[in-house]
Length: 493
Image (cartoon, rainbow, N blue to C red; front, side, top):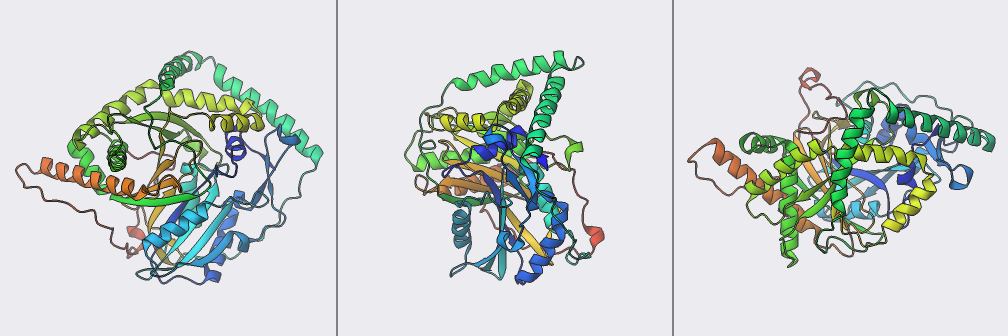
């Protein structure tokens, strides 16, 4: 039995029939697809490494205490591992449509909060895995760790066979109550000690004050736009592609960080979307950017450790170079403003509030006009080495992020083995044109690369550059050629 953190509990309790709080991904793998039994054996062998995948949520004290994680005495892998096929012609459009439908379904609260769909029938002999896991289980950075656990580092790894597993006995109501009281006292003490440590109090207070002043400026609403409004329970989902080498070339030639280049491309995408709708771009698009505050020694933890900053995407700037420079200056200022520090303190204080009250507050906030944030943009660095499933190399992975409140579009960015992918989640009814956003992102990247190449080679005539799909990745010839795992929890750039 393990107590859920305050932030994790809020992700669980805020969920309703419209706001579905699971994250996920769609991985495309080289074919032919393996047998279902083969994948089942591999997943079953890896489950002991991620205990949360065999645990369920149990409420405590009528919702006035944090829920706890307990072993599922009725765990059945076949419920979570599912198999399906794409309709003809089995293209990427059909895969995106299927993923949108899968992500529109709420996870069963009576079972461990995850699913993995094996998708056959993808064109060019490929196949796919659609995975979804509730946000209360894991944030994006820890989710990357889970990915490297479930997948293999070699095409033919050594197998250890299925490990014996017996669920721990379910706690009684008295034990749950005792755990609630102990967890409340311990959480209050640890939070108070973190806030009032004499060695850090003065410095921390200055950082928080600076961040709060910056966050206070967000009270000013942005102009109204179709990016905000009521949302329904169904989702559209699309993607865009880029190469990390291209992003680094732009960074080297034009300045900024990898994250700056990515945000500049997203800005170009939203500019294209608003213009296609006939809306004014003489404005900014304000985005919430989650930031991991997970320490390096927290690698084994799967609780959420996130804060947030807010960036204003300058969609009114037509010149892609000027857009990048505007983003670069702004993000440098954000790092100095300590917004993330203030946000971390706020989320830690949220641990004092019962999850029921957090849920009520979030639901009320979702029903008032939400003009302060237009979208959410989350960037998670993934492994820069080849991963395998049942001997098949993973070619690409596209991330999925939930949307909530009155935000109709959310973007997730994931880097893997030299590629950067963008996953765009959109409300089904209000955003049938989400592909325009994704095409705009790719076009903006191509423009920046053209300028960067011209900067590297003065006088060279620039040719129009088309965004190409990455060639299928090949397995490394020898294990010794595979790079080491990067440290978890580091943001790109």
